[in-house]
Length: 341
Image (cartoon, rainbow, N blue to C red; front, side, top):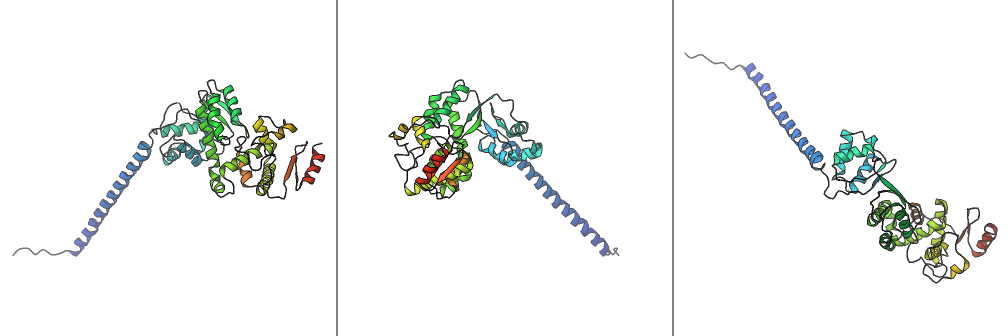
């Protein structure tokens, strides 16, 4: 008689957890494998493909990181300048391999294309050894003045070419201290100044779009305010007064616009100059002059957008440098007698 094989329930129960553990381990292993594979793919994409040098890497183009710029802001500046393929790749490179707080405020210029890892390294070192020249463009200066400055500093700079490019867009050459290579051309300086202008007014675009004046009118009025006023407070007051005049069709009577037409400095006008027949004579012609009369800074532009409301229509700068305001011509004459004579 064959032996009877008895079913052992305890043995069967013991085998089931063992199978379950093996199955679970296989699932976990597969999951870990997929995670590892995904990590390798992401790493390859971020730190191999995106680490590569952009096709149109800008050579000898100054890119400035200002004091107080955050890591994210610096990364954005470099990405917008076309120095890296990806903001994220540069940001993660800085976080993983470098100390982000080591980012240096500096003007960076690259004479050959480099990859993202090298860009991150440069950001933490500062580009202080580059042989750059300083060009300071002051608020209110006109294109021809900028050209004269650049010709003195840059050995092969074509001043006339710069004027030909810049005068048609007078008002959009942003006042700033620029650090540039000595080989910088008229086209490159023009491009740098207009690009900086666009960057600076970008946060104001919505406000500008909704304002009663066009961008061109805002810049033109700001260029007058830049030369007529001498502080943020006086800029906002003068802005309000000139806009009061524009609203009622009253002549602006701004000496600065005639000085621009005659290429004279502040305070050099004589009574005969006020009679000159030019559309820039805001004593003879109402409204704004046909173009900006220089290149205003950000404060003057903001003063146009945020004028100080008042009932004033007149202002003077006294011999003491202070501003005095008047609601009507009689008050204005009294201010002239008191503070200018």
